[in-house]
Image 1: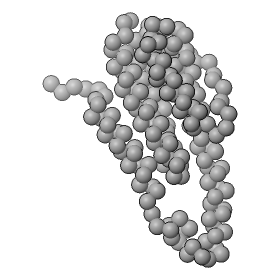
Image 2: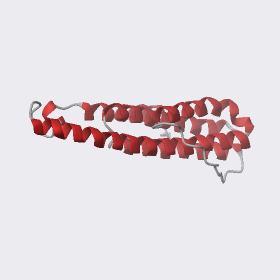
Image 3: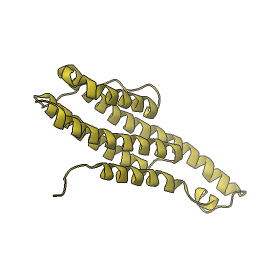
Length: 179
């Protein structure tokens, strides 16, 4: 009988695909980076400078979007830990990792955490909600990777892979958590 749901093989395949997606956009020639202009030309230099300013705005916007996603996720962890203290052993390490992700992706000061709401009545259901939130966050980070330049793309791919792994771990934890 075939097992359904998330498997280690699926998580590893997704992680590998994300890593490849982060590395491949960095591959290219110098002519591609300057829009086809040669390095020494004045037009190529002006275009590179303009792209640099645009890139800073893009990076800030991407980091802001990622930090909002991460702050929402962190607020969810905080809410579940407050509401269901019995889940602390399994959730605390994951919450700490999400807090580190927030620090890494924030463009400056980390955003304030908004109060989180949960429809879950028991700890297992609350952990399942967190797993779903992690999957949603992984999808959001993956979408941002496509727009991000170099190092930021690698950071976002790493955070997306971590979110996918967290979703798997939370799904397994929900099975073990008593209702």
